[in-house]
Amino acid sequence: DKKSVDDKKSVDDKKSVDDKKSVDDKKSVDDKKSVDDKKSVDDKKSVDDKKSVDDKKFVDDKKSVDDKKDTLYLTRRSVADEKSSLDKAGSWFGELMDEISWKYVATVAGAVFLCLIGLVAALLFVDPDVVSINNHSNNENTATATAESIVKIKIRDGLSTGEIAEILESKGVIKSSLRFRVLARIHDYDDKLRPGVYMFRTDMADGDVFDKLMSGEKIMINVTIPEGFGVKEIAERLNSLEIADKDDFIEVAKDFAPFDYMTKHENVFYSAEGFLFPDTYSIESDMEIEDILSLMANNFDKKLTPEMRKKAADMNLSIYDLITLASLVEREVRFPEDRPIVAQVLLKRLKINMPLQTDATLQYLMDKPKVEVSIEDTKIDSPYNTYLHAGLPPGPIANPGMAAIEAVLNPSDTDYLYFVADHNGHNHYAVSYDEHLDLVSQYR
Image 1 (cartoon, rainbow, N blue to C red):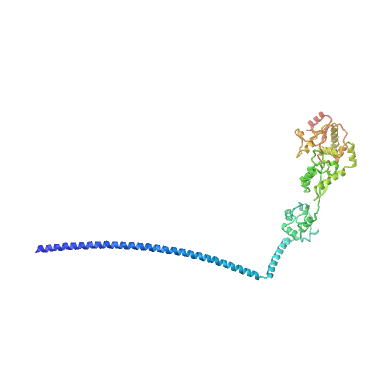
Image 2 (image 1 turned 120 degrees about the horizontal axis):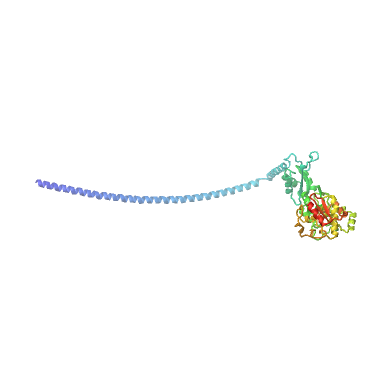
């Protein structure tokens, strides 16, 4: 019986074990199924979440597109509204302008005109020293002009009022070129200002300046032409005084020959050379070059008296040859006592067909004179070179004074054929060439 009970207990224990194992196996199966079910749920949830995200992104993209469409619509509408506003404003302005009467226009125009009048008045009368154009400075309020206050100005032909005004202002004659131009325009002076050389005071009243420029006021300029000046030297002096342009004077002098005895010879540079008598001349500021040359040539013609012309003819000298010889004497001699002696040397050499060999004719060919000519200078190829060519040069080399002309007409009675000047300008004379060489070695 005990064995039966133990067997039964053993069977029950085994059964219990089997039942527990069965329960555990079932629990394991259930747990695995639970895990699988959870994983399936999670996977489904993940899919659902991804779909939800995609759906949201699609909604957002669509919303963004819709928002852009709305913005574009609003922009177009804003532009349309602005255009409409401008159209309305233009229409309103046009209506407003239509409503303005001519009286208002006249009022505005009058105001502008008054402003212009004020501006002109300010320009004209801002300086208390400026007087009216028709009330020029008189002798009572015009100070005595000093040398420093006198300004000489040349107004060339063709200058505009503005250019004239700028010149006057730069020289201190007027204070305002703008005011000067305004006055000229108001009084219609633009075409009435004349060219010329004028003497102005500094700080003149505009009216006085206009009076000068419109009257063509001529000033007389005293010009001294020394004995022995050539055409080029005269041209330079007139140019320095602003009376005549140097180049223009030289050009006119080339063929200027109002008298028969001035007829231009072959190889001569200037027909006028020699016949522009050295003197002091009062020349008008606006005198033409031809008139200046005529003034000098006419003076020469008057100075050459009938008695002098007759004496030249008796010596078998033409007026042209007389003046050519006199020009050589003028340029070779520094002291009066030497003139008739040098004239006699030159005349004697011409008589025996001996070259004159004067340095003055070589100097005439040079741009600038030398203290002493060189041996090389004596070889210059020119008809004026009296070392190479016998006889007189082609024409005068300067404008001689009366003393040189008288010396040729009244030469000394000597036998000299040579002369040499010392460093002080005094000449020393010789009859023979050997004596001449001794003098050269002594005084040179």
